Length: 279
Image 1 (tube, rainbow, N blue to C red):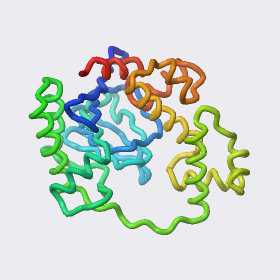
Image 2 (cartoon, rainbow, N blue to C red; image 1 turned 135 degrees about the vertical axis):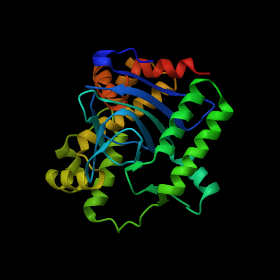
Image 3 (cartoon, one colour; image 1 turned 90 degrees about the horizontal axis):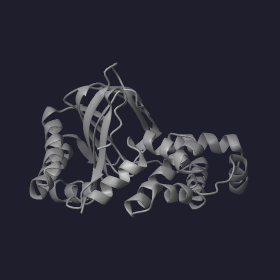
């Protein structure tokens, strides 16, 4: 358990080898705010107390008890308390492969699954998410795995569907995609916006606009998010936070700590300890 007790906040972000491809977060936040970021998998969060205010590409939405927040991969979003007392929730972070496997077995959807609504009033699904957490915390592998599959199948049946068809990429979108590739390759020593645009044969402001249109955030915000994602993978593999910080391009461990805690919801040390504690 992350032992930060600032303003009554607490959080536990963990993974269990009995449930591969799944992260779990149970937390209460009051002052903590999640900056603009995205995930490479899905997010299913069941609010149990208070109100969570989620900023999405379509605007701000509020989730109270009995509401399930559903966020698709790579969708940029923010989160913060919607009431003074904050919010508490239990969240599942299944990988895209976990969702695809369950969809292939239980639905006619093939390929990428898409949830059209970011917020749904579904008390049954919210209870199921809580039961997955409870079973995992009690070490009940059969129950946790079964409940996870029942939960995802329910969400797929009532709220899921195929990924909407996309239009052909514009020249700007192609430049944004290449910029993202270059930033991924040079994460530890990224170019300036001007140098990046020059390499791609475009202007800095044109690239800035195209990148924001394609990914919902400017390149520097995307880079910080990508660094934290890579740091998570390094921590998962046993790297120390100080090593991970330098490897992904942060100045030092405090620099990693600040961004990691804001985006993931727990400090990197607590995140790594939970990985090490679970066989």
